[in-house]
Image (cartoon, rainbow, N blue to C red; front, side):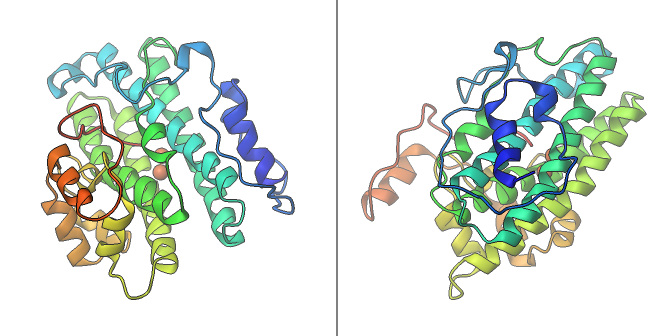
Length: 292
Ligand SMILES: [Fe+2]
Ligand SMILES: [Fe+2]
């Protein structure tokens, strides 16, 4: 199967089973085709993502003793995993000239994201829900689909969303453990271990593609675009060891840990003194939304 076919099956098919099917045949990349920027992934009506905001709210930690609420948490996280998969497919179609080893390595990560989505779906089903029972949003998709370069993609998805998931995954592992749900805990621990590899992949390629005279941090700040910022690259309980395992330098880890939410006004003042003003966001202060 060609990489392009695999990406198209994920993005342009509304059928969830087809989206989550790993390639059976050997993957080839002989016909990457011309660049295509897909506006929205096709999905079944019950899972369609129109907007970046809205959808179902994550239950509070204290509510997770209730199995139904844990199912809601898995529903939200299944949608995050699916969006990560779709953003990766979008990247393959948008950047057909990316290095062939980058494209091949991304396929391996996409197979992980398919597995993560299926794991969350199994857990939400075992808590009495079906995937599509609850409204979903397209937060990750909307933030990632404006990428103009591979560096934009790498700053956004692996270094920010997947970087943040190093914290979210272990936080939920702990919460599910406290609720006595060892299966859900183990799902989160597995995802955490995979996520270290995904962040490492992102960091490796970010370093290869960025200008050599820019530090990791300076390049990251150049390629992370409002309303996303370094503040979104972390969760409530900061995991230094996981970030070090992914290859982040102590300085980079410190800067992520110290990141604060950025206000629209400060960002606008900065950008007016340099280049064009970015599209105004709907919220004054950037929202923080977890995962893939
Ligand atoms: Fe994942
Ligand atoms: Fe991931």
